Length: 298
Image (tube, rainbow, N blue to C red):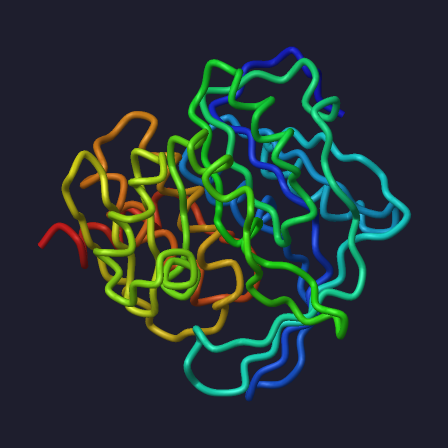
């Protein structure tokens, strides 16, 4: 494993998930988890990335895959990995049924001892993974603190389905974030507003200075009282799962050095390419640059 004294551009963390994806195209088994999708995306854009995760020993092939991409991985072995089932009942990729039957459990601050970074991205799958105390502890770091809303609004129902549940710690957590990512459905649940621009503004009122919203057609960013938008350009949609994870990681990868209006273009381009294949983004920065020139610079 990597030495923990290295300073990273970004640390991305969340439980690895063993994903069963069911759609009209059949049933597939995919290595998932927001940290997995996000780490691949950020590394492809040239960042020095640390991936912190929790998973069963039997799934350590994922650790080795990330390491082959130049990503430093800090895993904690757990009795079981998180098991997710993702069903897409219609051709609307934003309509899906999520089920979680097993969890690798919650994080504690000791799993981050010795690590330092310019940004930390919290990319959990369900609320129980990241207690508010962990968010508060990470806020004390001298870095940007970023989170995906999915890891806080999703809870597990008695039948194992993931549903959106009341979030008592909402303002306690959001007030400590620099950047929040959500999809259109999560944003409406949190704010009661179906208009994504109004939803983004409301989310920012609770603390985060930048909001990144994904939807079926593309990305909306609200930053510095301005809105920025970029559409996805996908030749053939194959890999919807991991869209938001890839989006926020690639956005932050560029946001560390570029303004929002530039970072969103890189994010839209890389995320578009990711959705053309199952699993994490496997291309390189040249592929992203090519799509940028073709679709976003003209």
